[in-house]
Length: 315
Image (cartoon, rainbow, N blue to C red):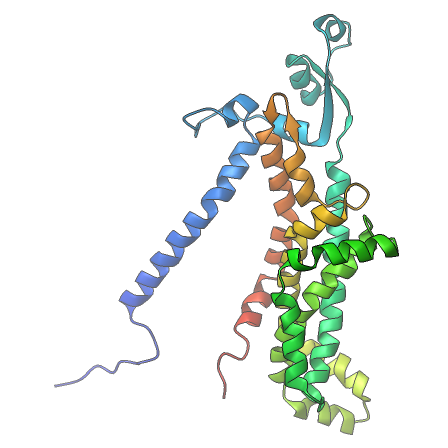
């Protein structure tokens, strides 16, 4: 009799198929809200609130027109006196007895989100990398206590410090400024960056740096030319997590900004249509808001996958 060898580590075909089916089902269920938001952005206002909900409908970009423009109601006589509509948005707006009065505030709010989110992510990752390298390579007194203190700042709910931060920002003149929001998000994200990056840097052998310094490199040169290239995957994974927080943050953005530095999350819910919420415009704003974070994650997907599994197998 011959026995077939079976690895206790490698999963069987049945278990792989079951695991793959579970992952596919979970992914499809998770993407249903995204598909529904995308579909709603191409509906007309009546179709978006119809009951039962319409799955098959005639696509329209009215939601995107309403998102990027402001409209005012006019009389039928005034609309009839206007020259023919030149764009689809003009034509659609006039059918509802309104005219386009100008551009909406969504684009400036969207630009604020880009500046604040990417700016704070860069600062948090930069400072977190330096701090993580120090904790990993040098004997820091009370290192464990300091690391726990740094992490504890992440555990604090935003509402617990909202009022003190608001009062401090008002005194310093940082309220409703992009600089103030970048500093705040950096302070919140740097703790996560330190903890994540310390684990990645710990996995990089010290012998690489020692060999570089024997060849004449300084400590800083070995850090930038040896450690940073090895920690690229960890930096990419940390940047994605920091960017997601800064991109989606709502509480501080609502409290500390109102106009100049307001980001997209607190602005999108304020989009009001005729007789209530303009759901196609809200869905269109949400869809546009998802694009940068989606593109950023796709571009770094390989580094993210390697980063979250880095150090899982030790030799």
